Length: 320
Image 1 (tube, one colour):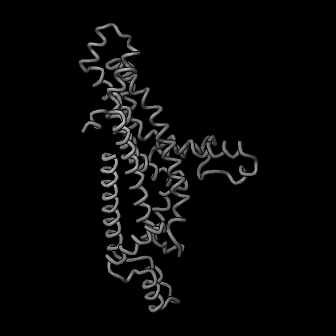
Image 2 (tube, rainbow, N blue to C red; image 1 turned 135 degrees about the vertical axis):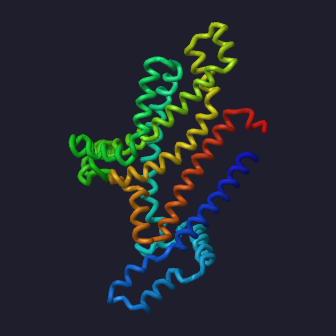
């Protein structure tokens, strides 16, 4: 419990620091949401001043941040200047869509990276290891934007996958199975693209961790006692390599979130990425701060989950 409490306190302080600096940077940037309205001749200066005062944009930064914290405690995450309402309802559906995409992509990436990385470690120096090394190097050299544009072009040219959105409007009237199939078709392309971006890094880390475990003295001693290679690999080597892999799992959450934002924009997935771009362009600062905070919460939660897995799997951490 002390370990968990320490991690929770650390995560809370980190989120508070992120919220303050994000809020300060956005609030200190020149201009605001109402600047574009000044070009409208029908909007008087007094009207604009009253609107800025209504949303607290004329108050000092500490006061605005304090009001935002109060709204955070009430679950509102501030007020959206564009929708004239709380930010939380605006983000709820978008955050769910991003979690679905990132979670599916994380599952895809690890299901592919684990067997590839383990097999490459057992065949190191051989033709299979070299092929995977060249393949991962090639994927690392391809910019993420080019990869997503290529997937979009594939969907347009072949017609195998939808080119955007989460579902077809007509699919909802065809029954549960047709609706689920339509949703899966919309999800496959962006999830596979996000997983493909993260795959080379995961494969290389898994390969390195497995090679280090396979070269450890206790594995060599076990091999000398005639224990079969399959038992050595999955009963001893994989648990020995689990610590860096669990830490890598928490790190991969941040990678998936950043890559998912670009995939959502290019492949028209209705998540937090497109909303973030729209809010930045319109200077809807409270929505931007809320999206940054949600991304930070996802990242901290992923690392906290990895820390708890390390605590459960490694007795040395429990002893400390």
